[in-house]
Length: 209
Length: 289
Image (cartoon, rainbow over all chains, first blue to last red):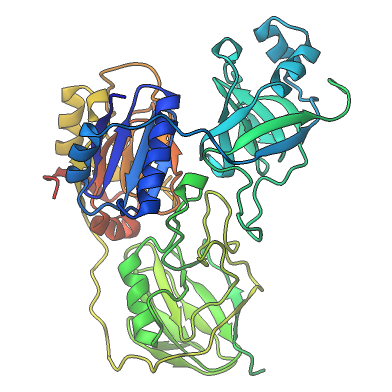
């Protein structure tokens, strides 16, 4: 894995790799180092092609060390699969079907047959960027974002699937609805999904109902 | 009544509960939040005898009015403003005793934007992920104050500080923000990077707790296209498609897709929190430490 460590201010490093899979492997390795006590850092924030390390005392030294290090592939995930019941009834289901060149019920079948994993979080507490769909199923964002997407909306954009934890504006293509609670700060952990979580969508009811 | 609580008589334009925020949860999409002028919040806590992590109130521009249900010690700092108890002027920047049922009025800022109100015992609303801070981006923590709301107070642990007035930095008439370039300065033309670190910007009225927005020369990209989302730090200077730099403050999103041209030193962000719209801003390039 070739990685590039970019300094960010005085106390952070942005470590850039060349794919989402590499970013997940690097994230797993950094979590392992923190757990064993060899990496002191306040935040480890994985994203699409990068992992941000914030709250470092000597970022330059870590940059040198990481660039020389071998990062093993992400270990097989031992974590259980989180199952999210979903009604495939989103208003953009037909548009997504057209992009994919399939019938609307096929969107549900393909989506529900995929095992996703949370590549990273952001946008809102509990919002995970889920990867797993093959590249040919990438979809564009909507030309005009909606001013209000309801909580529980299951949506697609680019290579990602996401579930809106609460009502907010949004430009993703809505294909369904779940009643799962993505974020509850009274619960431990508050977020149902965190980076690395495996996710399956389990269809409920008829497609397009 | 003798219970330890504060009734909100006038909430003001935007008054929020703030402490030192909730760092450590960025990977879940949780902003750090916390007082924008951290030194001012720490000072008012010290003046009333609170530990530094106690929750205080952060006002915006026109203060707020509060009626404590039991006698408390308060201190107001940050943006200088008139402070009155039942109409009588009292000290700003020093501990003041407010009797039970009296009206504490924190007036409009004379200079600067955000005043901080420390209350003995601290504000003890329910913490979320270890912090009582209001986070305006994600909606975590207590809602901004509304007229008629009641805030619980803790019990004082120490005596107030014995000072007549505590020195505090004046709000800036010109904001100089020291920056180190990167991580994405190579997404901009050399002329844009030069303009960014040599021209004068102004604080835009569109700023908030999420970011300080600026008006000034637009920064041109050297490369087109979209940056995949990546983690964002406090003080990151993100440049959206309109080319005007935005300095990320405490409630900033934890990941973002616009390139970050530079990062402001954390020590300079408290001055940024006090810069009123129209204040000239210069980004001063410094070496990484």
